[in-house]
Amino acid sequence: MGIFDDREKAQENKYFRDEELRFKSMARRNKLFGAWAAGELGKKGPEIDVYVQSVQAADMEEAGDADLLRKVLKDFQAAGKSATETDLKKRLEACLKTAIEQLEAGK
Image (cartoon, rainbow, N blue to C red; front, top):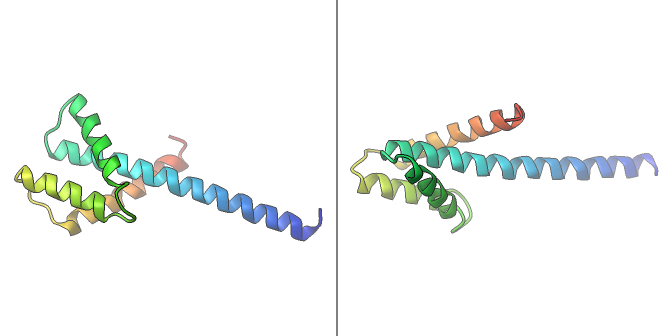
């Protein structure tokens, strides 16, 4: 193998690691966001896990975060909770930051 082959292989490996980290961090972000929302909605015990799963499933409806935000915003409104899409986006960003920190720490 020449130096260019080594570089190409290293680039491919980096790409796959980055994609894996992105996938894992987004999945963890959604779980953290769903758990936070469940707490805000007063869910207890097994209801929390069910709600988290519903939030994770909502994110599969379309590309981007709009489907996820729409679901949680609708649930908050139905429960009489005051929240805006901007508030939820900020929380989602905080959850992503926490997810990345946890993954980098090996948690």
